[in-house]
Image (cartoon, rainbow, N blue to C red; front, top):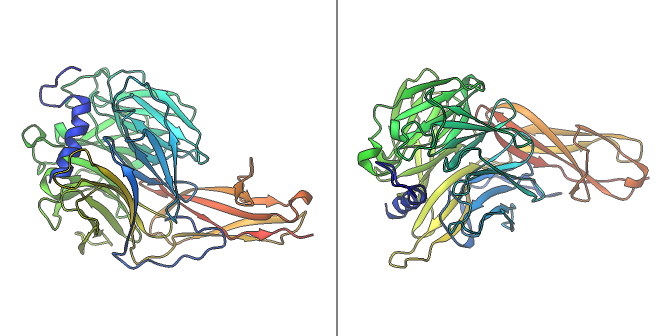
Length: 457
């Protein structure tokens, strides 16, 4: 692989990012009841060996959490009780580090989408575990961040090309330039993207660490860029400076400054304000919306999560740091779950024990209970029409709402409307419904499943 002038080769960049890190709700179960977990109450699940890759996590349209695990080249699904199921990603066996599963997001089509960094692919997995991958039209472009877009497509960054990619639910890919020049793979790329989010002005917003810029791209491919003047120069710092990005309920963008121990608020017009995290060596690696008017940050350098209150003030009211109870923790990614908890992936590397990287998935209570709940309304008998009603207490504007009816806990084909007509052969079955709500402007999803009703004659 060709050397970069001041960007490491693709595989080495991922290794370097993890090395820097290492050195420095879920749907209600059918018929179940969930309560608010106290703020700071941690629950962790050990998942075995870790590996090079993003180990990112996202809430899915089925109410479970989904995550990447490059160590076993799979997409994982974890239930509220901690049951994990893996779905293997088909990958060229010549790739010694696997597909390089990096970022993950819930797509607007009801599937989970992810990037295959080393394989130069974007993939999707259905809620029942069917995996499909799509090769990019540009080799060695290295897809990295990924997000649902306001146009019903999925958008992703290219770590080694001056472009942003768009993929339709059917798998058709198009690349858009970030600098007006033709999109080409370039090892010394300056206008390359890193992480990406849907955000204000119905646009995609992304970080460009080498350039020290945040980019805005419309769904037509028009680009504007905004400097973050306080960010340390990546060429001299040796690590990604502008890292993760998300949109807050305050209408602004929020960005991590990895090397500087800061988070940055950027208005849609590009005005920037920085806020110090509790530790200058916190090395924030991920940021995501939480319940109420909060953001949550994974502090990889300090082995902690941080809650940032953005409830209408010009500055965060409080930043609360919550240390993860597992020794030698390096949290990588955070995401909100339907039951109000914040979930995270965590790399654990005991000192002096090379080659013993372990992966955890965990959750922490926020003091907030279920955010999306569903209920079946109507008379449960043949010929009746049942309605799937829901309530959302999340402090964000609702976008699209998807419905899915279930028979005896299993999804029914083509029954994805708000209402369901009971058939005679449903007698004796338990019918429930699931609701998946997409929230603006970051376009994350939370899902809730109703208690079942038994169909009687």
